[in-house]
Length: 306
Image (cartoon, rainbow, N blue to C red; front, side):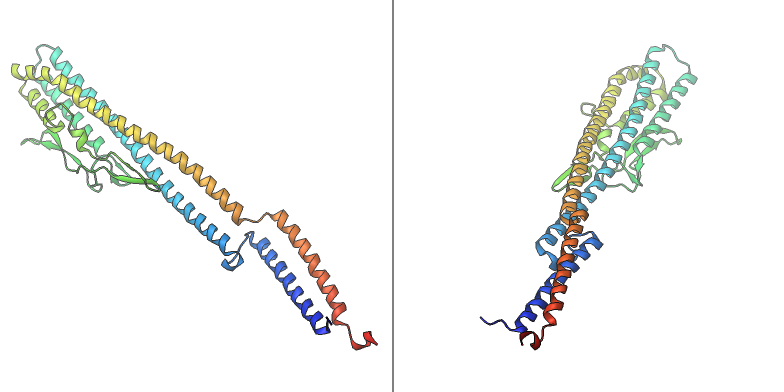
């Protein structure tokens, strides 16, 4: 086969274009520190990188939800500890009245006032909010779920719940959700009590207000009921603690997944600078060699064949 000058020139130009494109591509990778800069560079790799970026974004979103849920449960734990403390104080009041023998009117009034203060403390604790949202109102997070009730004289005689019985769900990973214990009605109603906490407080205040023999006898029966309600609150807080532990485990998994995803993305997307610079050096050598050969080929004339 006879090789013409035009064929030699065409091959040279094709080789020069190929070498130039490789040099340009490597320069782009070194300047951007990315393996690919547009979809046409490597469609399959770009697709995998896009999927990884979506997964990282989802991971970040779940991390935010987990952090919010953790702070929410920690706030609940603190509030319920205050309620437990108040219930212990209320128990001490009942015990003191039962063990004091004969009390004066002033002493009964002092105990009643102390009880009313503790009821107010319970309401304040159960109306704790986190980030502007009430944590024991069910789905009604914008309004205080608990309020004190008062008699005709404006004296505190109990409390009532205005929230609903919803436990708010939080998605902590793909297809995995947890329910935060936001149903404050569970605190109001203790199994085996036969009444809610508001009614129980109302009866306690009424007994201390009457302070007669029948009221004293009724107060002696109330000691067991105090323990029922107090234990119900302790158990409720234990369940909150279990949820908090599960959230901690979810946070650990989320952090581990974040590291794995970012390492995988870096492996597929980021340039190994040392290796890429060696490629660039080799490609530049090939490019210069191609140019050198081209100058010899392109300078060939008819005189070279005479």
